[in-house]
Image 1: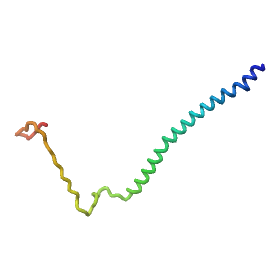
Image 2 (image 1 turned 30 degrees about the vertical axis):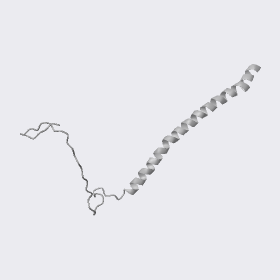
Image 3 (image 1 turned 90 degrees about the vertical axis):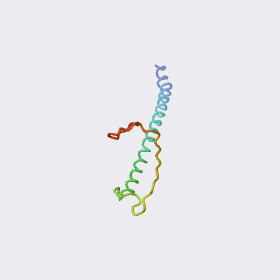
Image 4 (image 1 turned 135 degrees about the vertical axis):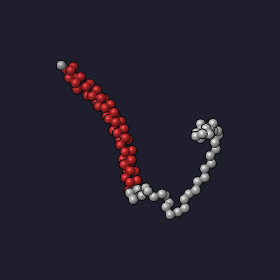
Length: 94
């Protein structure tokens, strides 16, 4: 009987405390992971709110810089080769 009491009061608490400490480490790791996953979502919602407020009165039918001269863009195209062209319907193969 004394042997069982010895095990119950002296040995068992050490095992249970080790198990609890091990469980706490996993719980802390889980909480950190959850917090890291939640943080970007909060920033994403903030960015969405900011952009929505900035673009609330934006008219997407108007071109940028309306009332100013358009920007001229020069483009150079080099053709390496063109396959045969049909003289009847002007189809070509590349």
